[in-house]
Image (tube, rainbow, N blue to C red; front, side, top):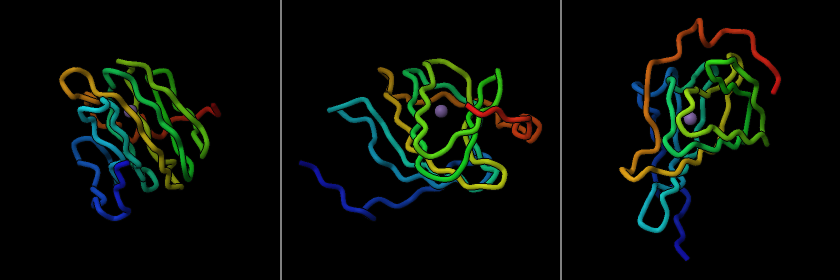
Length: 136
Ligand code: MN
C-alpha cells in the first residue's frame, strides 16, 4: 500500500494559459509506470472555466460539489454533484463553474504514449460562456 497523506502535496493554481478565473487543483494521481491514469480534484470559483481542449484518451468528470457547466460545440449543459460525464477522445469541450456558484469535480484522464493527457486551445469567451444552458 502506498499512502499519501492529506496536505503532503500543495494545492496548485490552475495555469492562466489553460483556465479563465480562479481555479485550484489538487493532484490525486499523476500518470506513472504502474498506470497511465492521471486524476485531479479541481475547484472552480464562480464563472471560472477551462479553455477549449481535447483529451487524447478521453476524460471522466465526476462532480463533487456546487453547480457547473460542461460544453461542446453543440451546447452547454448544467452539471451537479454525483453527475459523471465522459468526454470522448478528441472531442473539443470545456468545463467550469456556473456564473453564480462554485463547482468542484474529480477529473480522470489516461495519458497517451507521450504522457500527454490534454491538448489546449483558445480560452472560452464570455459570449461562449454566457449562452443559454440545457439541463442534462
Ligand atoms: Mn476536459
